[in-house]
Length: 301
Image (cartoon, rainbow, N blue to C red; front, side, top):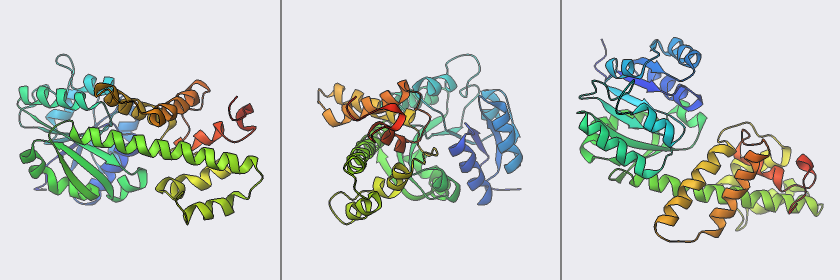
C-alpha cells in the first residue's frame, strides 16, 4: 500500500498523459482519470493502472490531489462549476493543482470556490513541453497559499527540474502569461528573419548558425529554427494556444493601461494562422506567413 497521496488527473491530452506516466514511474498511485474524450482517459488509465471515469465528481472522490490540465478559461470554470457535475462536489480536504495557462483572475476565482468547498487550490503553471512532462523536468511556477504549496512540494518536485513559488493566487499565471508573450514575440520575429533571409537567397542553415552566435540568439532559435526552415510543424505548442496566451497578456496590459505593440502584432499573426486553418500547427508554423510563396502568400499580402 503506497503512503503517497492518490493522484487524479483531469485532462489526459499530451501533457496530462505524460504527467500521469511520470508520476506513476516515481511511485505515485494515479488512481482516477477524466477527459472530455473518454477514450483518451481510458488509454492513459490503462497505461498507469488507474481507473477512467466519466464524471468529475468521481475524480474528487477517488483522489487526494487532483491535477488539472485543461485548455482555457471556460474549461477551468466548467470543471469547477458551482453546481452539477463538478470537481467541487464533496471536495473537502482535496488539493487541486491547476496547470492550465488561463487568465490570472480565473485562478483567483477557483481558489475562492475551492476554499468555500473546504478544499485547496494551487496554480502550477508549466513552462517546457511534452518531453519535459514525461521526464519530470518541467519548469513550474506556483501560486496560491504557501502552506498548501509546502504540502505538495514533494509531488511537484517530481514533475519539475525547476520549481518556483511565485506568490498568491494569480501571480504565477501573470508570470506565465509574460513568459509566453515574450516567447511568442521571439517566435514571430525569428520567422520574419528567416523568411526575409530566404527571400534574399541566403543559406538558412548558415543564417541560423550566425544567429546563434550573435544578438539574434534565443531559445526559440534552438527549438523552432530548423522546423521553420524545413516546414516541420509537429505540435508541441500550437498556434491556437499561442494566440490565446498572447491574448491573456494583452488583457493584463489593458488592465494597467499599457500599450504593447509587439505583443499585439504577434497576437494578430497567430490569429491570422487560425483564420487560414493553420491554428493546429505548432507555433513554428508562423513561418508559413513570412516565407514567400508558402500557403499561397507573400509577406505583407
